[in-house]
Structures are given as C-alpha cells and as structure tokens.
Image (tube, rainbow, N blue to C red; front, side):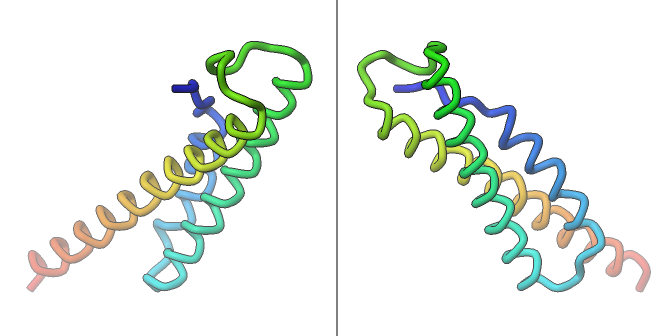
Length: 103
C-alpha cells in the first residue's frame, strides 16, 4: 500500500476549519467540506505528481504513477472530509449542549 503524503490535507483542513466555527448553516458547512476536500485532493495529487517528476521516492515502487495519483487524491479528499465533518459535528453537539444548560 502506498504512503500518502498527509501534510497538505492537514494544512487545507486547518485553513478551512476556521470557517466552520462561525457558520450556522449546515448545508453551507457541507458544501465547504466538499470544496475543501476537493481542493486538498487536487493539491495532494499535484504534489505527488511533482515528486514523481523529480524522481523522489513516493510509496511503493510497484504502483504505477496514475494509481498513486488517484490514491493520493482520494486519500486527501477523505482525510479532509473526515476532519471537517467531525469538527462540524462536534461544534453542533457543543452548541446544543450549551443551549440546554442555559435553559
């Protein structure tokens, strides 16, 4: 199994995560999560492509270039989506708990 570089998805997740704190619309949060995930997937695939061009070792040598690009893009997409949606769920849970304690 190839090793997926994860620092680009973490940077993108951190950058877009700040917008979840002020957003009160759940539909807009879902759209931002998909957008952030797509951007992360594209950036990660581009990063792996550049590393492949520069002949730096990325993942196993048994994987072809295209499959490594697809796996890294999909992995980055899923990483950011999981981080973003779990943060949004936690924010919603804590806001609901704060509202209940005020009443």
